[in-house]
Image (cartoon, rainbow, N blue to C red; front, side, top):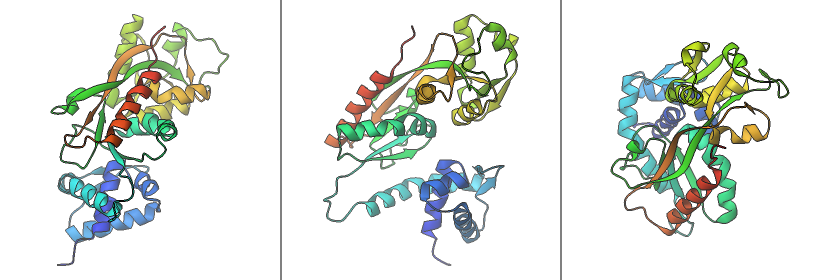
Length: 296
């Protein structure tokens, strides 16, 4: 039997993490065609289908794909860490952070330049994952919105989440007045992964959600942000994820109070306590505290 194509396995893990061929290609700095060829080679080697291609660049794991990911993910991360660390050990080790795609893309990564200013020599490697923290992974710090997903680890809050009613100027110009009548006439955008946001906002405003237009629903917050930016409708979105867009006037915050919708916590994996990790978590707490926006 031919040896297992390890590079193809690495590509498969990246596709699973990123949720699609194109996002994985961008992460690996290769073409989508190259990623597709690696996946095909791995499927032919194993004799089973690993991905269900979906419209656009997205892909969903088959049952065989989910089993392969479960068996291989921790091992691949360990190999990657070994191969990326020079034998001399003279290069400073990175802080490996495991978090959701949304928090990584719309909050953590935009904040990293501030970390570099405070700690120029500190490197951060960001992994994306959903669900409970897997303590077997070679990770230093886990970030999660649901503290229950940090069960078994010492969790510390670092960011309080408030949600805002936002719309694109494409759908509602900056100088156009907004009121309750406008809300009832405007299409709504919602995320399946954050089904709590619209009900929480409506309850805070004393509104019956049933009196509003039915919401067009997308899988996750990333897609909802994109849909709102494109002018498809109005959304209730976590302020930490759209603050930069509001400042740049890509989005407009409508005249309504902010609503508390949860918090984010971090946990250091047992045995990973080190000076570099403490420097990161101290920065994380101070930055999260600075970015918290309390209701007026």
